[in-house]
Amino acid sequence: MARILVISPSGEVYDHDNVRWYDYANLAAHIDHYHNIGDAFVFDSSLKLLNFEKLDELPIDRVDPAAIDRLNAEYDYVFLRGSNYVHAEMDWAQAPDVLRRLRIPVIAFGIGAQAPVSGKLELSEATKTVLRLIADSTASLGVRGAYSAEVLNDLGIRNVRIIGCPTAFRNNDPNLAIRLPPLDRVRKVGVTLRREVSKTYAQDIKRYLTFHRDLVKAMADRFEVTLMSQGEAEEKKLALGTPEQKAAAMAALRDNAWADNWYLDEQVAGLYQGRMFYSDVVAEYERLVRGLDLVLGYRLHGNLMALANGTPAIYFTYDSRTVEFADTFRIPSVDVFSGQDFRLEEYWDQSRFDRFNAAYAQVYGQMRDFLVENGVDNKMMPPATQPQRKVA
Image (cartoon, helix red, strand yellow):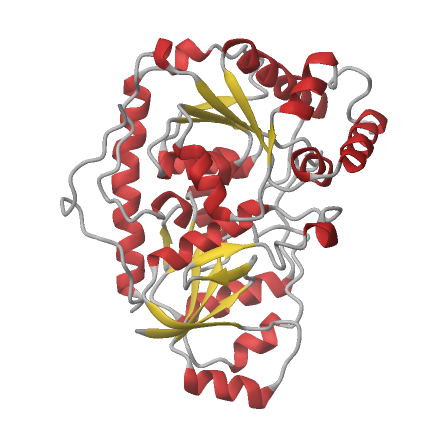
């Protein structure tokens, strides 16, 4: 099996291919630190698709010629963990100089571009250089969707394959399919939260937060709700903190300008205090979504983790990333800025999820082909090798 390197890991690896946050048991040391645990979902899922015997990180913050020579001799390839790297503010540190010295393939494992609300996407020369070096080192470069492929095409990079995201395929099931139960049998619902959002990418913050609040309240009125955070410090404290930390978190939320005395009303405050979930261990999110009947909301990877485990999910799209994910996998989605209200009954339609089922199978094949054509030893199974999974 392969000896591999990773650029931009997101957490520590244990039991070969499982990921949790660094020093996860020492919660007090990082409870005030925001880190998006969704990045760890992608890292964990990537490892679950690969056959390898050894894994190390490729540092890109320094150039050490002797160390790079050793890595060229001892490792088979390096992969860039899928994430939102193609945007105007990306800092690649010393990556261009490091990659110029590498002689092993660099696998772009589902990377994506981020479009601004207005104007043209402007990329640094470092970003353009990194993308071209990666493309030149491999048979193909893997992106999450059509917009990202278009951005790379405009840079003259033609060997692009749309492969979605490893999180979707983490269970190596080529025949996964979502089958909706009757809506009156739905009891437990997860709402994926993204309270913080940038005006650079979301066109109307007030509308965004209003829709966010109304979704939380509407689901709580009908179902047993779990609010699923992915790393904001206040939400972490409400889920895992001491009584003093929880009190401080609520005070900080009420004092935050985004709340403006309307988002955090009495009902939402009670839900934040009593129904919040957070973990620094990817496996705990997977256990959670397997026990839910529906997951919906604003988080790319929280929703995708649910779908990967056969749990229906609905996306709320608000920027180019969320739209691109929903388009790649044909996931039922709600445009936050459409001006339309959300009614769950309109989306609880098997034909909507059949479109996802068909797209999932197609993109699964693209991901497997991508790994094969780049000589990556992998665990992905060809179609029709497993019985189709159904959700009762």
